[in-house]
Length: 227
Image 1 (cartoon, one colour):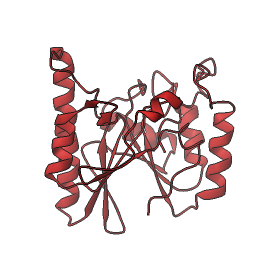
Image 2 (image 1 turned 90 degrees about the vertical axis):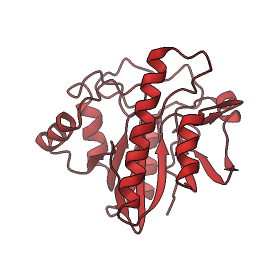
Image 3 (image 1 turned 90 degrees about the horizontal axis):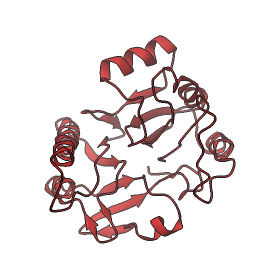
Image 4 (image 1 turned 120 degrees about the vertical axis):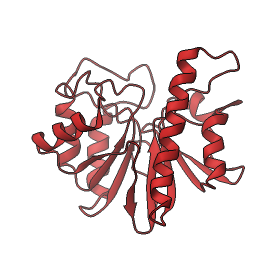
């Protein structure tokens, strides 16, 4: 599931501009407790906390950490608390958030599969700004590093992104090229909210890749079972 948009540390933040977000934090907890067992693994595909720093996001991590299962998180465009891998890992360890792991230039093994991914980026048009292109190329590199690390251990990669690589008639060809080259069969993504946006998302098989939208409101905050 993506896009928890937790705001326990900044209660003034709201998702009310979108429909379907009433009592969403309570729904996340209720559905999670009904479906997730302590030995399960759940991937959270970005936009996890509205906190602007690790300290401000701490209440949201505490909420996640207390829920059952092992959690793997990637960065979303609103995860402003995100910093270096070392700082995040040190923070999680010192805070006792021992059920949360960070997916960043790496992978995690699960029953013969490699959980891979990165944030991704917007679908840059032909007249791209130099800064957008720089960020996109960095995300492409991170995605490839993640996939290659899983393949090195003979695992079948499953890719999680925050941004959709296809949205409506807009294609992120740089991200897609990596997915095609490594013959990725399943790609999960979030980021998109509201019925209009959901209707513009690619769902199902396209160019031999099975795309899945997993933003929280699309799933009605019910975690989607993958394996």
